[in-house]
Image 1: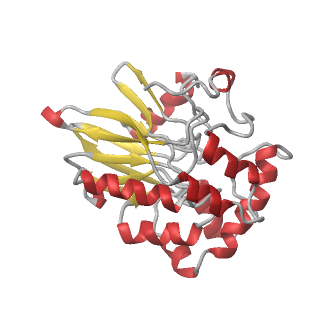
Image 2: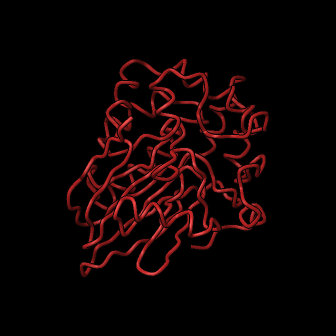
Amino acid sequence: MDKTITDLGTLTGKVLLFGGVYSNLQALEALKAVAEKHNIPSENCICTGDIVGYCAQPEETVQLFKLWKANSILGNVELQLIEGADDCGCDFTEGSRCDGFSKLWYPYAQSLLTDSSINHLKTFSDHITFQYANKKVTVVHGSYSNISEFIFKSTDWSLKAPNFITTDSDVIVAGHCGLPFNHKKDDKLWLNPGVIGMPANDGSPKVWYAILDDSNNELKFKHHNLDYNYKLTNSLMKNGLLPEEYARTIVTGIWDNTEILPAVESGLQGFGITL
């Protein structure tokens, strides 16, 4: 199937980048407030996908996102929901803990989403492109060729490079892996702003996003922590239908397991993130 690509044209001013809302309504509310505080218009707010996920309020989260009128690409979860698939398409190893947990949260989300929300998810494209400070930026979920590919800071550049070549881009903005990072090589930048729906396995309940700045017509970026009402999110997840382990992660900032992580990132569990 041909890819759908939304071209936002040339963006100016601050651009808010984030991913993985994961049905975390409280985090999305807090991030929307950040955008309003910095006077970032909704058209300059871009999500790398997976608005729906592990937390307790998928319907409310999609509806707030729709009301906000921010941009998003399709994450693997959106793609699966639209197609009415039986699983999240996260590419977890079959039989792993993450795979087992997905058999709880995915049907839970699927059962609560209205036709209105599914129809809004259908408006998302596979990728977003835009020009910014004389750079071409392309937004992907996992990678350009594989929506569910896990790309980390430690992932060899040889696996990242084809994304720049295929899209003729200077900057790739990506999501899916759940960890914020940036990786520069020559004049290319791979930027993962992180996710706001779950902590980054760093021992803190705070979550992550990034802001682009084009002051002096130069592309600059900064990673930021987000404070939100994680205690309410945790409480709502204790409904007997969602994995208790994920509810615990919301508070502790520590993932239940590091199955998807390379050795480098796995070894950093609980040590905090410096960006």
